[in-house]
Structures are given as C-alpha cells and as structure tokens.
Length: 398
Image 1 (spheres, rainbow, N blue to C red):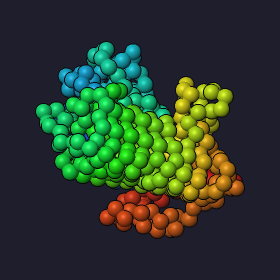
Image 2: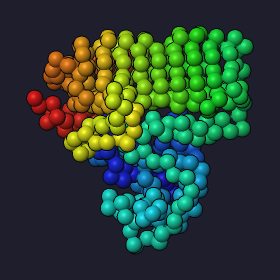
Image 3: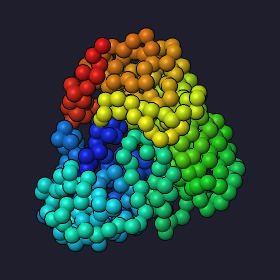
C-alpha cells in the first residue's frame, strides 16, 4: 500500500512556487506537505505531478494506493478518513474529490478531482479541511500548518532546556528546542502560538519573536531580528531584519535589515540588504496578483500580499518590491524604483527594464551560492531549470 500525492490540476495555479516542485513538496510549516503525510501515515509517499518534474520527484508503481489531493494539509481528521478508505471508494466534500483508494497506475483524471467520479463509492468528509490552492494560501494557513507540525514532531518528547538569559512571555511549555538549538538573550512570546527551534539552529541575541514560529534545522536568525508569526523559516536559511507572516523555503537568505511581510520565498534565494516588500496598498484595497495560470492579474480576496518568489532568485541592495509582486524562478532583480509586479523567470534587471538572464551565467551563479552550503547544482537540477527556461521564454519577450 502506498500514498500518492497528486497535483490534481492545481500545479499551474501555485506557480511560481511549483515550477520546481510538485504541489505536495511545498513547505507551509516546519515540514513539507509530503513529509507530514509520510510521518502521519507511515506509508511510502510518491508524487503524481508534471512530467518534467518526474526525474527529481518520481512516481513509484503501486498495486493498490490511496491517492490524495496534494494541496491538502494532513490534519488528524483528514488522515484518519484517508486511511479508512477501502478499494473502490472516494473521499469527497461537496461533490469534490479529496482522495481515492484503488489501483495506483493511472489514478483519477483532472476532471475526476473536480467532480467526484460515479464509478467510485462516495464517503462524505465533514472534518477540518485546510487547502493550499494559491501561493498566498501558504502564509495565510502557515499558523495552522505550524501547530499541526509542532504537535506531530514533539509528541512524547521533551524540549532541550532554554537559557535563563531569555525573556519568555506566555506559556514556556509552548517553546520547543531540538538538540543543538541555541537561543540567547532574546524575547520569545507564545501568547498566540508555539515557537519551534530546529536541530542545530541558532537564534542570535536580541531577537524578538512572536509565535507561531518555526526556525528550521541549521537555520539562523540574525541579531536583533523582529519576527511576527505565523512565520516559517526553512532549513539552512539565514534571516534578519523584520519579517511578518511569511514562509521561507530552505537555503534562502535575508541576512540584513528590511521588511518582508505576507510573502512566500522559494529555495536558494538571496534578498540584498534593505530589500523591502510592500504588503498593503495605499488605498487599502484588495490586492491583485499576476496569475501564471490565467495570464492576467487575479483577486486574492485579502488586503495583505507581499512578494511571491520562486527558487534561485536574488535582489540587489535597497530593492523595493511592490504589493503583490510575483517573481519567477532564477530572476535577478536590482535598481532604483519599483520593478514590474510580474517578473518572469530568468529575468535580469528592474524598473529600468528587464533582459534575459543567460542560462550558463545563471547556472554559475546558482552553483556559487550552493557551494557555500556544501551542495552543487546537479544534473537533474540543471535539466529541470533548462526546461523552465525554455517554457517561460515567451514571458520574457519585450
């Protein structure tokens, strides 16, 4: 028996974050959605995603499998309902398929996910449902994901002791330090949610943290950082300045002052000193963002959206990113004034104009950053990025 996590027709709607990963490989909390499913079900996990991602995220063959909409947060009610499915059954909510149980070769079609197929027996699900259908949902549901992951990772375990040099506001029992975590001379407030510090992670002196908050393993919070939850900083990130209700995927840097709010930052990104994201329009109106699925701006039904940034992006010193900016994969953004609110993948420049970031030069730059973390840009990564470069070429045309 295996668990297959399907993009279920949502892959394009979660771009630019899903250019380089399946939907279930997104990280709204401490763990990716797939890692949380694996830990909660103890079933081997596979992905049903875009063909060009299959080398890095393989689809394992399975006789009988439970196939789940990969955009769903695996909260306890949902996990139990999925595990209770019998072959030939579908878990549904208001006519929409959430999961199926049956032969794992082909799986449900995209239409089957939108409307529950009649060839399966329907089980109605009435429990808690948290779904990530658009990029901004990652920071909007970050708090629920954090609470879910903290409960999963800390059950039956005891936190490492926290230094008495820290000031704690709220319940100290909601602070959990993994082995090797270091926190000194900082203020930690758990009044609104837990604070989790990962293995070998460091919170430098003078930081101000309001939960819910998670700092991934080997990540670093720089001196005097101000963090407003819900916020997730992924593994091996280095973050300073002011951050509010945002999600950083792994290996990204924001080492200096500057504000990032209501934003999602991909892997291997570097935000230059005093990079700032606007997260609220001056007229307090609904934020619209560029949809790479629809090819035009769409409403978000919220007043707060900062920047949605794909992997391997960089910003120069003093970069200003406007409310609801979308940055594709591998962009290098710099210069005075606000750049466009949609910056296509592999773009180079800013408000004065964008040119194409040469792929060979981009690979050299990406590899230099990765070497600093003891990694290299591998063959599979280059193939994947070359595919993204080709498929996004039309977006870079002047």
